[in-house]
Amino acid sequence: MYVCVVIDRFGRRPGLLICTFANAVLCVAFGFSPNLFWAVTFRLVSGLFAGNFVVAKSYINDVCDSSNRSTAFSAISLSWGAGSIVGPFLGGLLSRPAHEFPSAFSPSGFFGRFPYALQGMVMGFLILVAGVGTYIYLPETKGRSALPSADTDVQMVSLLEDDAIATQQTDDDVDDDDAAATTTTPVSYTHLTLPT
Image (tube, rainbow, N blue to C red):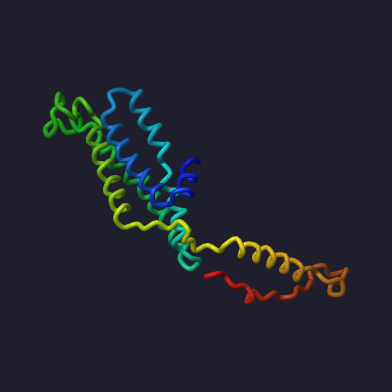
């Protein structure tokens, strides 16, 4: 996925900003589509910039540690689910306003000619607000990962190997008649230190 290449090279914040502002413009463009070909084209191009979920997960990995990472991932998944419910409802409510509300919008007017423009403009505006909030309040996190480093990964592999050796069954403790009666040696993880 090209978004992963962008965020690894240039950072999480630029990836979020590019995807967010591109989707804001493409939502408005979708609303002004004159026919099905352009509507599908704008949605296809919008899909190429739909990497916000991936970038947001990378951002969560950078700013969260083991004490709050699961809560953050749950919150982002909950937000995605809520958006999947509210978004189509709001989009359907705002589509074809000249047909649905002819007393407020003229069928021969602007929204009669572009029946999905109101939906596209509102969605584009909401995405634009999110993009401006990202630009103002969200700092770059590239290089500030709360995850363990590669050295710690080597330590973890070594620790797992030690754990596997320590939990092997000993021949003296195993009774041939009772295979369920095995003993293991407890392993202490207190010697593992994570870099700060």
